[in-house]
Length: 449
Ligand code: ATP
Ligand code: MG
Image (cartoon, rainbow, N blue to C red; front, side, top):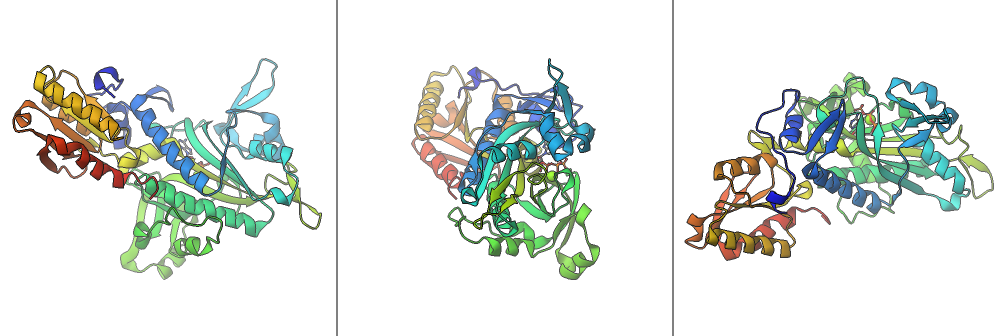
């Protein structure tokens, strides 16, 4: 992509309304634009990250055996009357009437609708297990939307719903999502710790919040320090097998949100030098809630013995649009964002230091074509502007590698690579640059890892 033809409106000043660093950087680096309280446009640069995050979420859901679909944003109030949540949900639910004065709502979550899909088609235990998911916009009329897309009113969520014959099988389904979540966040470069959590309006008795530690996080959390560097289950994990040992290994160490905090247990099981009491960002939550929706909504299947029983369900959310500020909170410096390669809007930025100089233009155009041919997603800064501003922009927008081409180096046939993360610089022969970048980037893509 040529910068001159792209749409990347970078702001010099830090917008006053933004309190936390990720919100400031998302506005300054041209990822989002606020449209109303808690409502944002995703500009091209931000949208690219959003889609990369969504793709990783989808790949890991699919790997774990969930099946993707899409449900509407507007829902009929009648479905929610069946479960009893139409009255229970409160002011966070945006209620709407259509021209026929039918009660509708903008979905804050989809347990009712998916239960309706399920009961319309599934009759027998033979069709189980089943896990259906979608990635769709939600609306919650939050009292205090803030911190940009961290807590917005309209936000993108991946929500999956599992259906099983009984509790044991439902817990096995829960475990598959648990392992998928560990892999999902890790692939985005995040350390997200599963913590015992309260179930809130979704209901149920088994739940974990996946939490990224950050000073600006809205949740208070307590955990064992060893949770921070546990190895992540590999891509070839057998999701048809028993995942209990993996989940047990993770849940055996103490980790809980403040709502579930048990001081006595914490102090008895975590040595003093391993106690972490911190703030965190909830990037996802998993729930097992049994027959809470299937019973009132009559979502039943027949067992092998012919008896009809309500299906056991779980639901599993990832805050797709919240993950992005969480990544930025965890990975930035004074100059700007530092994207992990796997979710970076571009993997490299090619910076031409003297647009209009024949030799520099020729070398930069050639590198641009070669990077493209090598499968590297590159932003080519071909704007006729001073070097200082270009460097500042490249650092601000956080592309992992900068390939710098200018007349001085070219005299000796050389270009420079700057690593955004550590700040290291390498000078190398122009012919070696593309292979070097490939060698740096490919191992970090984490696609099959
Ligand atoms: P919170 O406690 O932060 O309000 P929640 O527990 O109500 O979130 P869930 O119902 O568990 O949210 O939704 C699944 C995921 O969706 C959350 O883990 C979070 O990452 C994301 N999410 C929830 N509310 C918002 C919001 N207002 N803006 C952005 N993301 C959100
Ligand atoms: Mg939650």
